[in-house]
Image (cartoon, rainbow, N blue to C red):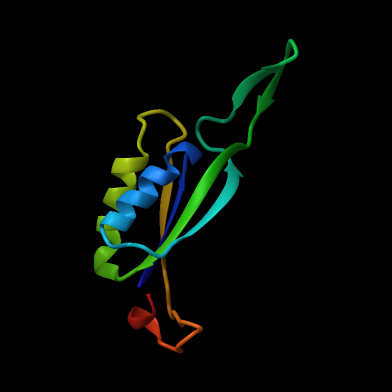
Amino acid sequence: MKKVEAVIRPERIDIVKNALAEAGYIGMTVNEVKGRGIQGGITERYRGREYIVDLIPKVKIEVVVKGEDVEDVIKIICENAKTGNHGDGKIFVIPVETVVRVRTGERDEEAI
């Protein structure tokens, strides 16, 4: 099993969430986060003053899937989160040792 973590633009979350659900990947955790990457930051103007925002608001999606489903999930996220501009995000794949469904005690793939 693998955990796929994707950090994407907030305005793309509904598109990505719906695409994953349509493909059968319903369960996910979503968090509002801030981060920076190659784009560095953005320059904003407020009341005539210029300032730099170097931690940009993003959304992190976490999905735990079977190992054979990882590439499918990555493809869905990339196709639906991509705008073609800096700041589209990153995807991380992390091994998962054990999953336990609290309600039933089911483990691993039965608990996903």
